[in-house]
Length: 191
Image (tube, rainbow, N blue to C red; front, side, top):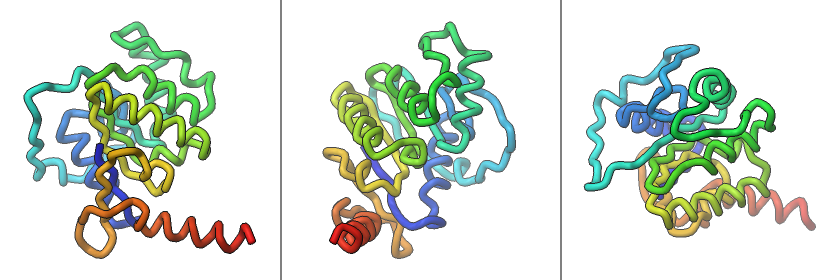
């Protein structure tokens, strides 16, 4: 499991999108079978990437972006229902519930690419996401996640890569700027 962290505008989501598109995902999200576009502004970075794959290929994959989940949910309901994975009506759920529903149906040995999942999730649901991630990793799934959430950064055994400071470097999640800012805010307000 790999987590990208850092300040807004440092390139985390751009790299994540490039990895997803290079792997074959639709730039707006979904599974490898999704092919839709509401606005085509994909970076050309994916063309410069060479992905290294292991001996076993993922059985399934999904790329979820918080800002395009509504479009993905619409496609699940209107075009892809009845396929290999039968999901509940994602429009009948809240944004966060539908986000988690999509993840709950991922089979073992999946590739899951998530861009800022905390945008859809309350802190309690972020903890539920961490449980889903840890279970998925135990079942052989791979996760690549961009987040600003200290809760998600704290997922067990995650490799955390910071984009702060002009170069990508591995960092202990407890020493990230996001954790420091949250700790300082809570210390000041909980007095």
